[in-house]
Length: 73
Length: 145
Figure 1 (cartoon, each protein chain N blue to C red):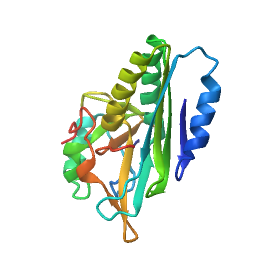
Figure 2: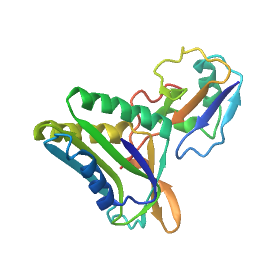
Figure 3: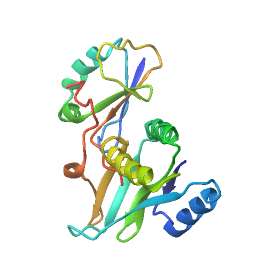
C-alpha cells in the first residue's frame, strides 16, 4: 500500500492506495472532486523528495505528498 | 541552522543568539532579514503550516550553496498564529565579505518564497483563510493534472 498525504490547505484525509506508479494516482485523483481542482497547482513528493516524472515506480510503504502553492515568510 | 517555533519569533533574542554564535567565526558581515506582519486588508494576523521534512532538505541544499561561498545561513520561522506587528520569519547570512552576503540573502529569500513548503493563512474575524492569491506553485507543479 502507498500512503498519499495532502498538505497545507487541502482539506482531505490521507489515502491508502494499492497502486504501482504515479500515473495510476493521477487517474484516481482526477476523478476525486475533493482534490481534482488542486492538481494543476500541486507539486508532488515521493518519500519527501520532489518528483518530476509520472514514471517513478512505487513500492509498498512509499509516501506521496501533494504540496499546494506556498507562501512562507 | 533551521529553527521552527510555535507562535511569534522572539526577534531580539534570536538575533542576539546568532550574533553570539558567530561573531568570533571571522565573518566580516552578518546580514539579517526580519519579516514582520503588517496591518493590511483588515487582518488580525497570519497563520502558518510547515512541512518539516521537505523544508529541512530544501534548507540543507541552501546551506551547501552558502558553504561553497564561504558563507553560512541561519533561518527561523513560525508555525501557527502570528499577530500584527509580530514576526514570523528571520533569515540571516554570515559571510567573509558584505557583497556575498547581500547577494546571497536576496537569492535565498526569493527561493524561500517560491519553494519552501510553508502555507500562509490570513486570520480575519476568527477564521483562518488560505492566502491563495499570494501563494506560488512550486516548480514542477501540475504533474498529476
